[in-house]
Image (tube, rainbow, N blue to C red; front, side):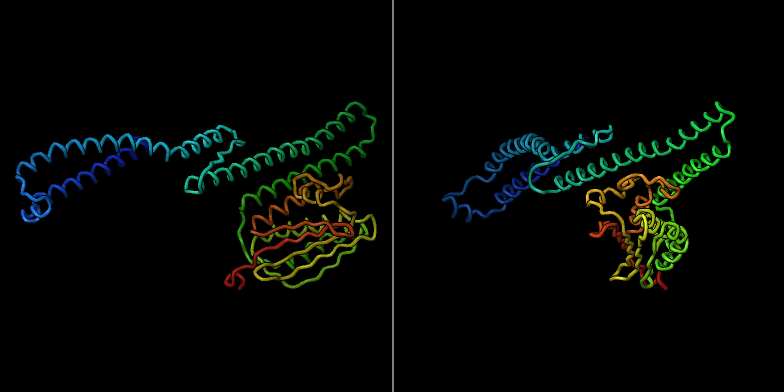
Length: 357
């Protein structure tokens, strides 16, 4: 039985029951009312038996009318009340069939159905954006993975067609291309692991992770003529030490690579605020527009252009940072510096008192 039928029967049942109770009360009143009270009201005393016998047919007629009226009125009223639910159901079927652009946009006052419809529209908006992002990511990842494979095939074709070619140079180029493909695959695995939240949370000191990241990347900074200045306090957080180290390393690496050609600087600072710990990474560099900066966390986005060297990265550095920050319930802020370069701020919640011990 449909909900509309159930509501119709409920309306008709309540209406008929209310009428029956009202008639029963009138019948009982006529039966027990004293003759003096009837005489005082009407001026005479009617035959009580004849009055009650005449009352019964009228009672049946009234109850039948109430039943029919309740069924018809209840069917119409239930249909009007459930009309928004029908629209929501239709939108759900369309979404299940792959159409995510449809919106309910329910009009009227803000009742329970309106709240449900608005929540469903908001969910469809987020889902549509997520699906579009995943499709764009898949297309970009396919392109990025195809590039080193295509280069490898071209190099192998050259070696096969020209046996006199310098095989030492060929091996070096194949090694570089293969290394880039491996780095891209590992970055995709890190991004997938972060998105799945498949890690154990434990107390972590961000300041120690900063020291480890700087120590690892110091040779790269010296090679590129970049100075790293680190400062800050002990910053206790909670999460995956491996992922947070990956996040810190990516930020410092990005600040070193995307810097001035010479005499560049990277500033790394950790601090503690109320209920949050903050990691700030700034670097010198060329001036960037806010529009460009807003796209830097998208996968395979490399700022003003691709950097062609042995430390170019795979275009997933800040995308991984964003993902790791989100799964740790933190926030990521990226703004351009007036003098050039970027200022990146990561805020993470501090661990509960019992977890910090």
